[in-house]
Image (cartoon, rainbow, N blue to C red; front, side, top):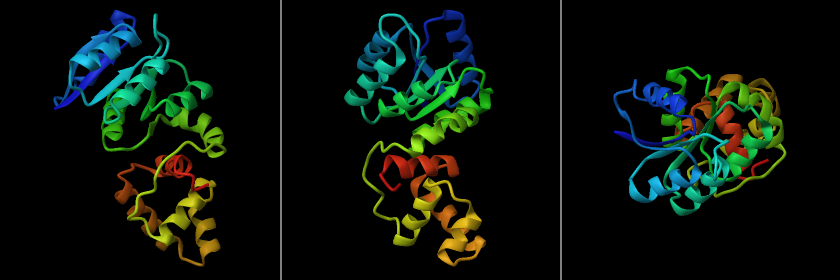
Length: 210
């Protein structure tokens, strides 16, 4: 079972989000909160797998709560769920430890997919969010150690992806076939448990490869 703490200050919205998440029988909202402070208190009293946070909430907003939760419970995943497709909010959320950023108009299956992606170690950004924030992320370094199973060739391909190059451009640069580049990318995604090229590009940024 995927145990969720849900923080949203508007009760009717919170109830709707809870219903959306629980359309998947493996997802269970085990605690609800109306603000960031209540979300942190819920984390202290309940074992959860992921915390879903709105951004604008009274007393303590979701960005502040994300930072506290990430620092105190680094194994718990954090998904921001908001109405704001805002570049500044998204970058700050990732810096504060969020594993995903989705908009409230997402389809139920996309929301559940994002939850599962966060739990698998990926960084889940809704398409329109990624399109807005990627140029900023590509020019900023955000963190961490590189997976030791990656080969030098895989790291080289990841650098090209982080710099926004297409498969054909990578193939031409490295004197490989496009098919070989695609195979390398597929292997990299499997190793890192990432879903797609966008997540891989952000991984390269977070790990100082570009």
